[in-house]
Every structure is written in structure tokens, then in C-alpha cells.
Image (cartoon, rainbow, N blue to C red; front, side):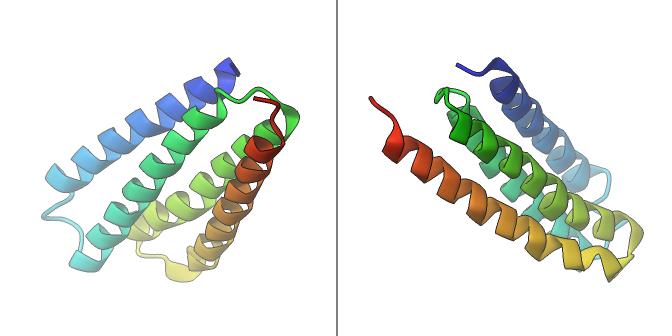
Length: 120
């Protein structure tokens, strides 16, 4: 068990709940429909990959730690850029979103490799 990965995953999932509720209630009348869509997508991907982090926490090996770090990077780049665009309207950071998506793909590959190579 890798405690820091489990705790980070739990924190990021809880944060997604807070952001989702904030977006649905406090920002519903403030943001455009497009910006609310960005928040919704960011929350979904953050939750999904926060849960992936929790799964990583139960597979203690070096490759899974790399996967966890890349999942975290993906959350910050993918979801973070969408949150930033929704709140500021500055869309130049959109270039970071697909880089975050690529991080997710790499992390899932590392996750699969780690599970495949495990002795259990």
C-alpha cells in the first residue's frame, strides 16, 4: 500500500466533489454554457483519475508510482486547464488540455504494465 498515493487520490476526488457542487450551484448563473461544460468535463476526468490513483495505491511497485505521478500531472494539466479557461475565459491554455490527456494515456499504459508484471 502506498499511502501518499491513496491520500492524494482521495483528496483529488473530494476536491472534484467540491468543485462540481460549486460549479453547479454558485457558478450556474455566472458562467456560460460552454464554460460550465468545461467544468463538468474537468470534474469527470478528475474524479475518474483520482479513483485510478486510489487503485494505484494498492499496487506497491516502482512502475505504479510512476503511473501515479503521471496521473497527477494529467489531472493538473487536463482538468486544471479546463477550470482555468472556464473561470478566466483565457483559452490560450487549451494547449495544455491534450497534453494532460496524453499523460492520462501514458499513465494507463504504465498502470497496465505494472499490473501485468506483478507477481500476484
